[in-house]
Length: 559
Image (tube, rainbow, N blue to C red; front, side, top):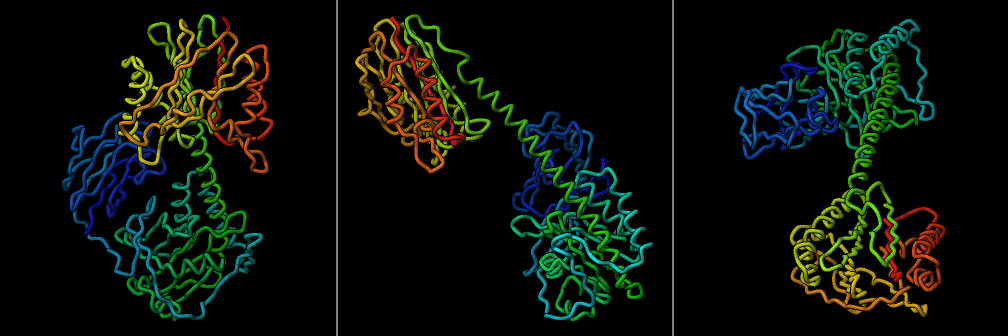
């Protein structure tokens, strides 16, 4: 027994959606379990989850809300038989205890997209035997030599070409292909499309039955695997009596008399799925020329499905790129808009993410008593996850330094915040510089980062606070960080950088290294900006293409 939804209106009106799994996300995004194709629907709109024997629905923060029996839901709500679920203008009815064909102990039920709800993949045992007829597809060209009459093949190709004209979404291609098959093969009772993913898993994507009440279909994994692996279209004129399928539960249960199955082959000659039809009528078995026509149809269908999937992946990639572009703009908003206008000091900074967004961080935070906090940090990893943690660091650092005057206490509080709120496998290295513009002193606290380099006027470079470096933020709570304070004379410079600088690699896997940074720091440059630009240029020339996020901050006392 299984609960199910029925689409009352919309493009899938009348479709039954069986709820046999643990969770179903409803929304406009093509990867949702239940795709609701309407413009006002959020990408991830609502979710149905199973708890014991009950099914609960909740809204996922959608723009326009989710309604049960015309009442907006604001928390988990148990579904009852006959409930009306409304997602924008699309309505579903919820039903309990609909008879459903459960898999046996040797069966594997897989939920599939589109119209294949209620389809079960069956691991059939089968004895080696001779298939009644088969056609082998060329792995190089994807073509097949057919002997069916030209008129029959032409009619079939015209039919499917007409149905597939202008269709680019996979979920639209699948039903059109099966609709074409039913018009070409009038004796067909059922048909389905099954695809194989990159890991070799078979997933039914769409099914069609001649009889409205025949909704549950069992598919022989043995037949599908044979067709895909051998790239052979097969025909069994009497499947129930065929020794190859004598142990096939799917064929026995449904008294299938004749089946045809053809591989779907992409432009590179790789089989990525199969197209199968069967008939229950013993008087209307499929013949050899039917198999040849099916192969022609499968070739055209494969082209359309392959193109539709490529288009879908391109659209997803465009959506990801749009999201990343927006994320990059948001992240840049957390970074300083420009260099500090501090009398008597000059600043240079450089920031580049390895991806659209990154985990490196720097900031200038004005403090009371004519002081400024200069922070530079590195979140473990890079990409979206690192950028989210970087955003948290930016907000927490500003709040903590604004509310706690003592920098050592503020640093410990910041560490406790991260220890309590980030996963165990994440951490942040962070160096804090407190620059006193009146006393011309630099106070350094360091949580697992490279020590700041201080270039003295005699050309010597010191690693400020190297002995006081402690663990990164988020590793252990209740740590006490030691601070060290040094004077800064006119003309002296400080260099801060993330490991994207010193760990940049060349084509041979050699790292740029801290000594190269130190060598540049020792040299005379007219301005601190020229020093920073020289370091960046050295790294670019060394590594060729960027591997990690990179951040560099340099500043100098002018007077």
